[in-house]
Length: 216
Image 1 (cartoon, rainbow, N blue to C red):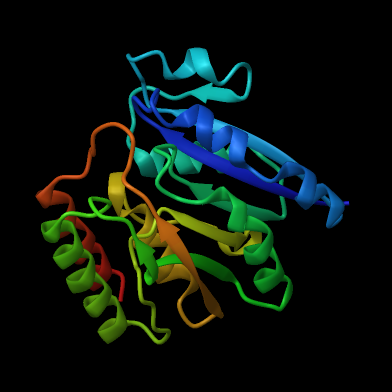
Image 2 (cartoon, rainbow, N blue to C red):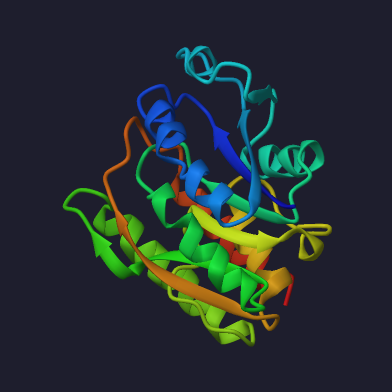
């Protein structure tokens, strides 16, 4: 049976993590013939996040999002790997549809916020502008176009995920530099306001841009 690993990086996500876990469509994925493992990889939460996820977590401290993803890859076995943020802003229910796009031969499927719909308050004007600029840079430098470089929901074939470049919030861009040109599909998603506070800072945008340029 083919297996799917769903990795959820967290840092102080007590307001959203339970909902994310509950909404993962395990039964539907099982009916499709997949064995599902879910791993919450925590970066040192102090708000009780780990108390809410039972034994489905691995505590990682210190470290940022990229380090959590790499640790999650080490600790899971699924041939297909999904990353989803633990803040409740992304819809886990679309994972089966993303699996079908991977089954069609794509190396990666992203949940595109810009092709879907965004609820009021889900993304600030500054973050929207930053995402647009970084996506434009990626589309100028790499052979495969994307509409949402920094989305926190994506599925990939594990075999493509070797030596992902980048640290912290560069992880999404690092994955894109590896897989651009290998078949990237996009699925429009509904994006909601996150529960809790954002850890993303303006300087992270500059670091992402630098990674895109330096890894070209």
